[in-house]
Image (cartoon, rainbow, N blue to C red):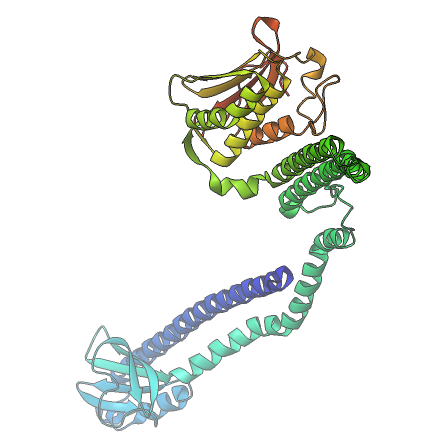
Length: 465
């Protein structure tokens, strides 16, 4: 499980540890450089003093060269600098003086200047210097151990307090992270204590800026869920109301059929019963279609298709119904109408529009289905010669279970609601307007030709839903 608190604590402690390590390394290398420079300077000064004193003794008028070579000045030099460093003094290729811990016969180092050598199983720092006025040489050296001890002493003095402060630092980080995440904990508590029916947005006043975007998206989701639940409640209420009537009619027709004597009266009652079953089946089918039309379910079914072919199939399928009602049904689609959508849903849309137009047209009337194509859109119109829809009612006909007053009985008021939902899925627009010559009704649906070109904006349609 991912813990933001744990990750913050580990990250902060890691940053502090890294900073502490970098600081320690910088202090170490700087102290080491300064201490080495100090000790090198000290060796060089000792070498210069030894050279000057030795050269002075060798050229002293009060002492003969034999006295010098016999060690008169050697004892004085050794007593004066034996505790400072190990050294050798060479004159004309002969070793004149050496301390006890300096080599007895060979030279300390072969070259001139500073050098690091392994002597007596440890590393030494040795300086070779020659007097400027004569063949007098000096070798001065000391072990690295003294330098190293001083470096670690300095590091201990500087870094030691930091190590002591580590536990305090851990406590401060824990307390700081906990206090810093308190607004997040409050937001979590508010969400956790909500009931499934409490879908009001979360107040953003005390929400941290870092998660305000997440909470904002959550609020959008809560609003969408609230709207969906409200729609479902209205839909359930309307569906229950609409189903109650056909079920009551079915029960009445069944009772009449049971009580009717043998013959035409019972047969008529059974015919009415079958018609009621057909109406109830159509209503249930429309309810199921309406509930299944969800964007998440249908998005994977999208593809490019020809709306003209769909319209042809719908006209051929509903031609028997038009013939039965004495309505002339025609299709005007001179060219392919390519759109991006769902074939099954668009088939339902076209069939619902044509079926609705046929059922509202009088005998001898006409229903015209027309497809027009331009550069950006495909327009489907279905016109009938029925009683028409008053302008003030045209926006409401797309509401579920709404029927225009005076409309023929038998419908549930779901056909145009299904049409509107399908059009919305396809990024189009649908509207009702007066039919040709002001007679009847024309349903106009406009689709974008490409999925990447939704209809925003479109020219305003009259009386759109």
